Amino acid sequence: MKIAYLDCLSGISGDMTLGALVDAGVPLDAIQQGIDSLGLPSCRLEASEVKRKGFRATKVNVIHEPEHAHRHLHHITDMIDGSTLTATQQDLARRIFTRLAEAEAKVHGSTLEKVHFHEVGAVDSIADIVGSAIAWDLLKVDHIACSAIPTGHGQIKIAHGLVSVPAPATAELLKGIPLAASPVASELTTPTGAAIVSTIVDQFGELPPMKISTIGYGAGDKDFTEQGNLLRLFIGESDDALESDQIWVLETNLDDVPGEAIGHCTTRLFESGALDVYTTPIQMKKNRPGVKLTVLCAAADIRRAEKIIFKETLTLGIRRWVASRHKLSRTADTVETQWGAVAGKVATLPDGSLSFSPEFEACRAIAEEHDVPLREIYDAARAAFSAR
Image (cartoon, rainbow, N blue to C red; front, side):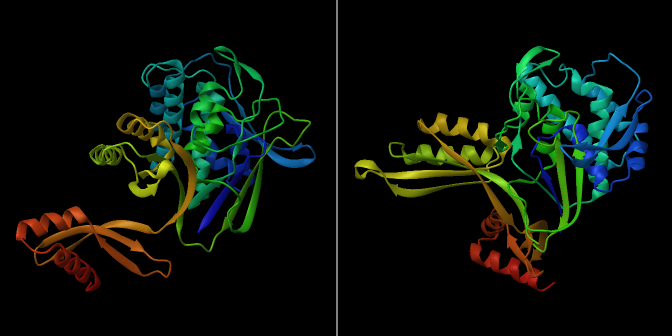
């Protein structure tokens, strides 16, 4: 499995990302060809070798004619849709910009249709994001991991005036992502960089086990006294055939909630997109029996899940933490039995063999229709898969 790891000691921005990708071997000409098809005014990418605190790196600058346009999301997506980018590149670029628009709309109390980009709607930011989307596609990695993100500290001036670091949109984009402290009094992570990592990264944490083949260095504009303003990109191979990602674990202890209310809360959590919900009997203070409610969910679903838990259980607090997990690669499949078709999932085990798990609802429907024990439907479905 081909792995990429972003080492964000000095944060991440669009130009640092693009520089690291080019330094890692992605052809600048191929990126330029895609940028040319966007219809931007005389937009040209220039790569040069620079040094930051004595370390060499690639700096990618976007050269273009001056402009004063403030674009909306649809202006940028129209550019992307009308370009010669591949379908994969267009999809990634659109997703990054949509995340940006969602963050901007949230902090300004606007909508996706009405929010307009300021700094990130400029030519250089468009080139950074679209160029990065092209480069990641050309890199063809199977898994992207990333370190915790330092934002820096202090204050910066943006189109809306003076704000604290991280800027409001950056902070919104980094929700659910582990942050790191930094002594640098500057904006280390920009909205563009935050949008990129929050869209493409599969897992945040330490450098994963891999055999390193390439290391790329992307430079930012500033040269700090404390450390090199660099983004380091590791490319390598892992022998681990298992897929991995990160999920959030939410937990709360309940000792005064009726069982019906907990059951209703569980149903609502599943309906809201929770990956799993379960309860565990526990012994609480003063020897009271209680229930521990546990929810597994994606970072994007944390707020929705917590609202449901607080509303339905009236708990006073929810514990939460991020957890890394390994999971088997799986695909949807259907097998034919004597009672009809049964849907299920095919998982690829670490040794390459396949395992079929029938879907409960599909088996239950057939069992009720034909008045057959549920276990017989399960057995017949597994036997049909094994007989292929």
